Every structure is written in C-alpha cells, then in structure tokens.
Image (cartoon, rainbow, N blue to C red; front, top):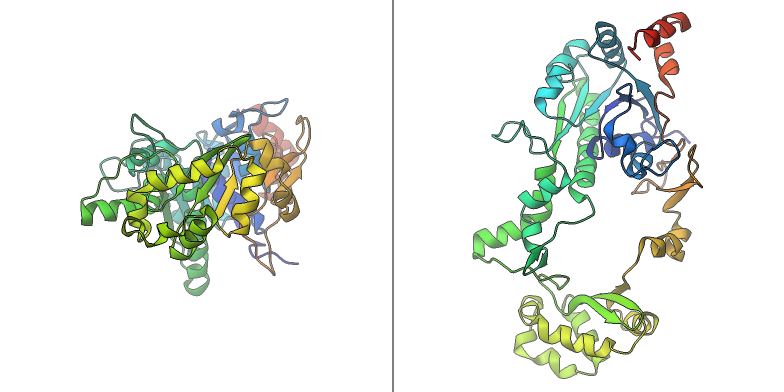
Length: 394
C-alpha cells in the first residue's frame, strides 16, 4: 500500500503542539518529516517527562514518524545547511512569531528565494497583521480571548479547559490548509503561505456564542456542567461516581420523559423546545438527579442506553486505557520508546481512510538521532559531519 504523501518532504521547526501535531499527521500519511531542533533539544521535548532521558508525554504523541536533526542555524554553516534542507523540501512548518521567523530565515520570502514552489505553514498565537501579532501566547490565550472561558466554570470561578483544544485544533486546521496548498501546487506549480493561529481556531469554536451575543444581546451565565442550550444536561452523581446525561431534541426529550415516568412534562409550555428547557434546566436536572440517587453507574446507564438517551460515565485516564471499545477500535497504539517503562499508548491518526490509512511506523526520535543520516542525504561526508559536530554546528 502506497501512502498518500509518500515522496513529500516536510521540515518541522515546530514546538509544543500546533506545528508538531500538524506535521505528525502528515507523517502518518507517508511524508518524510525532519524535525529540526536546537542542539540541546526543543523546549517541548522535555515537558511532562515520562522516560529515563526526560522525553515528555506530548512529545511522544506529536513526534512519531519523524527524523531528528540537531542544528544551530545561527552559524554560517548552519544557515547553509538550512538552505540545503529547504531546497529539497516541499513544506516547511513552524510555530513562532513573525519576527522570529524572519530572524531564522523561515519567513515565506526567504524560503521562496531558495525554493520558489515551497509551501510554508506557520502557526502563531494571534495571526499576522494585527496589533497583537508579535506577542507570544499558548493555548490558554486562545481560550480566554475567544470567550469560551468566560462561559465555562461556576458563577464564582471561570475555568479554562485543561485540554489544549486551541493548540490541537490549530494543528488540524493547519494540516487541512497544507493539503489544500499541495493540491493547488499540483495544479499550478505554485507554492504559498498557509497561516494558522490559536485565536481564530478558538473563535471558530465559540462563534455561535458570539453570534448569539451580537444578534440577541444574550450574555448567558457560567453554568458549570449544565447544558448551554439543552436540558436536562449535567454530570449527575451516582453511588459510585458520575454520569453525564445530555438530552437534546424533541424525540429524545420525549423518550426521557417516558423513562422518568413523567410524560406530562413533554406538554408543558416551559419545556416546549431545547432553548426553553435550558432556561428551566434546574427543574429538569433536579428530576434527573433524583432518579439517579441510589443507583450505580452501571444500573443508570443500562436504563439510559435502553431508552436511547445520550449518556456516559465520567472516565479517569485509567478508565480510558481500560475501555473495551477503545481497545477494540485500536485508537491507542502501544509504541515502545527507549527509557520508557513500557510501550506508550500513542493515539493513532484521528481519522481513517479506507484505502490509504495513516500509520504509526516509527516512534518519536531521540535528540539528533538522525543527524548523520539527514546530512548524508544532503551530500555531507562522514568527515564533514564530524567536523560540524566538533564545531557545535550540529
């Protein structure tokens, strides 16, 4: 089976998540991805260490199917290696402010001067062209600036998501843009600059809130785990844990009323649609909690599933690892890594193609593991590579 992106070469100058996860997806689909790191390693390599040598959990996820080259690109010899790498690449991916891109020779104008049909994919915090463009920022910046955190948490405490959805969302939108740019280049021979940023990714996810606010002047309060526009909806306490129940739409609400033995609720004007049910959600949530009292998670879920009501138990990370559906679907691939106590459960490509699926072929690389190999591909002899290493270029 020949993969979709076989023969495509990617230079990954990414850090943390937005750029590295984008290039990981391309690597899953067959691209040759070279991760270019500082000689001491990128900052993201050492976050949340899980191995004897200090590689982090997110690093293992976001850097499978890549080769690692260490390089000091600020030296004249390092800059020459960068030019040679770019000349043989199809795509360059980086996430850093525009000023840093220009200083590193990774801005689109510099890259295009070396290879006219190059595709540059860049991810920043705020996007290029506005008053915040030169600021640095991480996932939480996108979350708080897009309005989502304002609506999350309790009335007394806003709460950002522990899951970095702006980062991973930006990686996926960037990967989509890269594929569009490759398609465009195939048809025209022209490269282009693909831009992604944490803020517009987060705005994509909060856009309905913004539309509602602008058109209706609604400013809904923080509601914890309750539904924003549906009810009953909450995390409900059981004897042995918690279960999330989300009831949406007339058919499911009618099934829920029957399950509760409260069919008269379906005809009450204050519960006539999802929005009205949300406004009066406390009443419905109280009824749901009273039904849950004294039941175990398994007992409640058996009835909820039989009634075709959306519900699932609150999982701990260990529950996820033990889940029979997660195991049957093969979503997490055990992948050995030097110094790890056992194979790490690495997420497979998060979408599946029937004819040309993505695959995890190699683990994340050790620091500089492929430096000699990559430089050899560029035409450097072993003695030259030894000299570069002695001069602290690689």
